Image (spheres, rainbow, N blue to C red):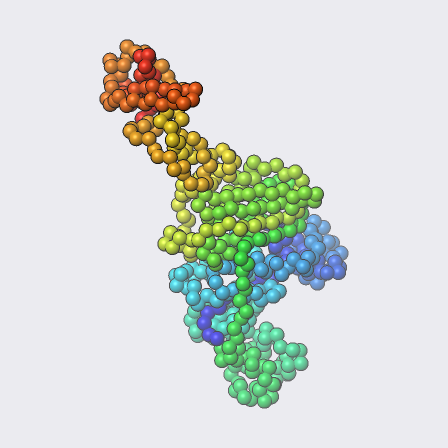
Length: 469
């Protein structure tokens, strides 16, 4: 099964998913809590190593932070990364416990080559603060072996074969008996095995080895089992420490939003509203964040969440996050470039979403016409969402700025200082309620050039009712 595959190996995944962006020395304990299972770079630089006793590690680094294992949570980390990788490939395979396999041959045209895809991938990993060994290969097994052996990236067939040949035979994961026989024969690298006839290898070492080499070279099909994303998005992330400030939640939330973006891109959807639950000891706080037109980009959602956090007071320390997205809309064809890495320009919908998030959903409204000829009653406030009223707009020229209370004008100014340009337009209405009007409206020009909307009542008094732009 030759093509182009990309394998990501996350050697520190159980530790880094709980580090929450901290740069302090960290170590993850084994299930017994007696030895170090994993440690980050800051701890390793001071001498801490895997399999080291906890007492020894603390003697080297007294400020070392120790994290207890959560075996039930670790498969969810990998599934979350599978959702995230949906922005790079629609065909993703879980490779437990620490790997992902992506089919990328069909994606190179959209990313305009392997280099662009690789750059975008590594940039995303840096933002999420996840370390990974990455490799490409012409078969799934080759990509995995090259990733486990330190990584590789090249499209040139000669470079690929040369690098694959240098991989130790121990990377094949054969049973100890067969591996011992290979060492006894002096076969330590893949190039030595691949140079031998398959029939001779099968006769001397058994069919298991030749089947593995056939999958490695593509002579034998090796189709992976692809990950099926859920119908709706629901991501959870427990926190290693209690968080008492909302801004400290942004980094773990970024990881959940990155998963959401991959989920949306794989399905060609936009999310309209997110439901965020802050897990606490006694009761959870829930909040919603919406976007006026729907959005895919994780950075846009992160900005909206940050604005929402500015108005939020934590009732108790937060020990976990839960993010749901159940309201979607299809991505309009031709409106967006799914794989563009260039920053997009601000849009009115994005600005509107930021204002709603900062001020509250009830702080903004739109105006819609009402079936009433009286200007002050010819409109009403309506929610931003929903359809306009079926009432028709009133005919004639209307000002963009209507005064809340009409301003009385000296009668001697009208016709002298204020030039009447257009009118009259008579409005007689409201005889059925307690606010009847009988007015003759004109458009007038003031000496400084301003244009206003003024009217004369039946008694002869003049009033200014609005200004034109």
